[in-house]
Amino acid sequence: MTIRWYPGHMGKALEKMSEAIRKIDVVIEVLDARLPASSSNHQLQEIRRNKPCIKLLNKHDLADPNITKAWVRYFENETGVHALPLSAKQHSETKQLIKLCQRLAPNRGRPGWPLRAMVFGIPNVGKSTLINTLAGKSMAKVGDKPAITTCAQQIDLHNGIILSDTPGLLWPNMEDQDVAYRLATSGAIGASALDYTCVGLFAAEFMMRRYPKLLADRYKLDEMPETPTAMLETIGRRLGCLISGGEIDVHRAAEAFLRELRAGKIGRVSLEEPGDFADQSASIMAEAESGQD
Ligand code: G4P
Image: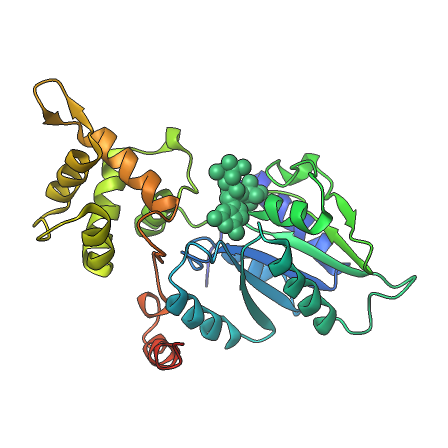
């Protein structure tokens, strides 16, 4: 038997979302393409029933393109799921989302029969950016308020589609420390909730293991420092994060390193790949890599 426990307000929020999903035709789950598993919310799987679901791999402009391809294949193995990488900031790219919604609900989108789509996602994945780009104007951000007090805002896109914002909060699985550190590395967790040095060390270790060449190019390294601490010190020296006496300010170095990583200045980086989660994904990765352009 599985025992589930949600705080009362979370239970109510899920109930309300589940109710809202009954009336919609397409579920759009916005994920961060750099960490699609860690930025997802598993409860959504439970409440979306059999509605068609688009997993939008947003911020793909920042993610490793080969790993994004592998994630697309991974998600498309799930029943009723379609994966679409895009950048919510680019109007031209969001048109693909409209086309996909229309394909998934072909009997909707006519006068009197609007296609109803709802946008879900944890904070910071780009829901508001997406809604604003699709609406062509800045809409109020309601998604980050508790569902009990909030009604989903409805936006008529004037193309047969009515888009709704999430009627509440969805949270990632923060009990898993790896998930929490990856979210912190991506910038999804606010600065007040984290220790920059710890997250910087996590990110440095990850980058040394997965993307050593990007680090070497960005910070002009002749040889790779041996430890994440030495890596942060080297970056701190390069970026001029010094305190009196010429010592490295590791905290500032970590902050600067994370800022560069999040902004894509080091390169396009994915913080997780399907193979990190399931053995069967190894073949999907290999397939994606063989299809590189
Ligand atoms: P949310 O509603 O899900 O909480 O997320 P929101 O749209 O507020 O986006 C969170 C951050 O992600 C914003 O950056 C936004 O600009 C950025 N973002 C959204 N979509 C994309 C994308 O496709 N590519 C990239 N590179 N960034 C994206 P911010 O720094 O918090 O705000 P701002 O200074 O950009 O306004």
